[in-house]
Length: 490
RNA sequence: GGCCCCUUAGCUCAAUUGGCAGAGCAAUUGACUCUUAAUCAAUAGGUUGAAGGUUCGAUUCCUUCAGGGGUCACCA
Image (cartoon, rainbow, N blue to C red):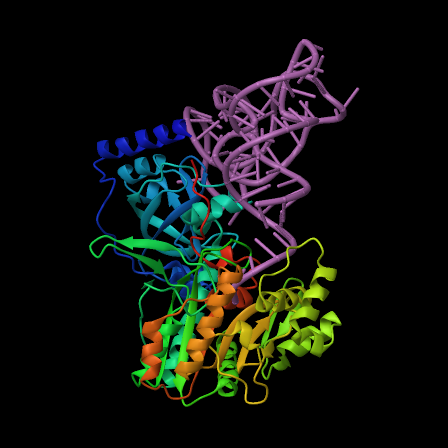
């Protein structure tokens, strides 16, 4: 509100009359609040009286309880909160005048001794007060916090000030990424960065964002996946590579989808999809050791064990089982078409065989895959970059890992036959002509790379945001992305 | 994109059948030197998301729009 802004602005101006700089340059902090708590929490009130240590610390005022010639305040330093106690007789007149100009939300530095109150709360008895920054806006209310989801995401800084548990989610996100990164470094992988702007969007079935480069006067696409560039590196003989970075897909927003999201993709020469299912289990086990001592996550009122090994089911077999449609009929496009027309009379018939299979999988299978499950042997029709199965030429050596009804990982034995890859791209082009606007485009530059010979290899992508959702119990992807995309206001 | 719900003070929320728009916190003024959702006294704060309609009268009923949430569909 403008009135409160002006009142606080007036207070800021009054600081000048006291000879106080409203925006000083630095403040020496001897202890963060968590250090103070760790070091002094176990002392008794009497023992603390013998401790002469002078503490310098700083934080944002989140509560003021004033009693005339003395006051208690709670400060929050972004991690922990701590009480401070100010007495008129303990500070200079100037500092006491400064105290009268403070508001909730202001940031101050304090110097003083540690003591415990009669109610045994660890506190700082202030003998010097330093003004560090003014808040011109009142903070959200103190014990309900900030509930409005929209405001929380639009003004994430307020969310972080008022709802401390939010910071735990992002601390955990950081730990997860650090853990995964060091896992791959330990395995001898090289971390690389490939282009975010592509001339031909590829590596995943998705619609891209478009942009334009002025000097070259060319349209470019934000990448939907780094896959085709990482495989160029395999051709070049980089034996083990991974990339952690953003992908951009021009699609709807939901509890599980943000238009930009973070993926890790990793590739290794001379391996196949079996090796990578094992590697995925090892990766999660490693993560569990650090973040999930009992290997169990809490997911919406139920607990899910992330203890490998994980169940493996075949894509077509599980659809057949859950839908009741016989396996042979599922493979038969005409039969499948009839079945879908009967089961989903209100929906437009998917334009391609692949899209029909995806519909079947999404409707009958996906949401029921709560326990970690590898779905394996995806059909060729929806896997244009995976190598054909050794046992059934209609299938590929591709797996996806599902946990809590979400697709978490997608990996396969990489298709390295350039002639077959060209045929797959051409089949995608036909799907596109049938109306599948997510079908992939022919990337001749990539095919040219394959024509130089790429050794057998495995590759995989893991959605980091969703993994963080699992490990933090967040129900929405917006909770694990600091600034999720929202429609602009005004 | 379809359907359902929500939008009231800076924040969290009330408001009976359609009858004077309220509380707590935050703010302002005053009292108070161990409080912690501090307490006590007083004050101020609103075009009830926007536009239109029905009505003597609309926060309340209707229509449209905007934003948000949920859900279904597509993608990871």
